Length: 200
Image (cartoon, rainbow, N blue to C red; front, side, top):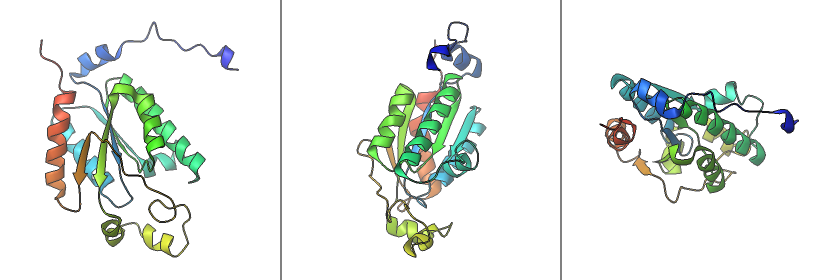
């Protein structure tokens, strides 16, 4: 069947042409961290700040993706990998159209993150939302850790499924030590030079 697929590229406008129209450079901001670490809060905050600055963004949150695009996937190792692959491919399409894409996904292993990076190439920007699991459990805004401790949820990251901390993220935010606003300021300072168009 693959022999009958013929992607079109020669008639598609280039990413640079889309970026010129939008007056921005596209990037995929890939937020990694445990459940409860603050990924979604930082992601929403960043999107709001970028919107106010006049940038076109798209936010792909793990929970939202699992209710739509990835609603047929579970939490086995194979399904987690496929979850990230689909998210990366969707992000690639958005970035190709000049959109600044913010992904909020646990992305628990180095191999999964490496796959996303391979798909996205130089558009990939890894942000590690670093928060100790003890603090994440204290927050437990969704009640997931409590259920996982009781055995009601299987393959829960950080409890009975591993989380490998990123070794070389582009930037690390410490959400247990600094306020949301302080972390957003730090992230915005890092991101803005990467998305502002070059001056001729």
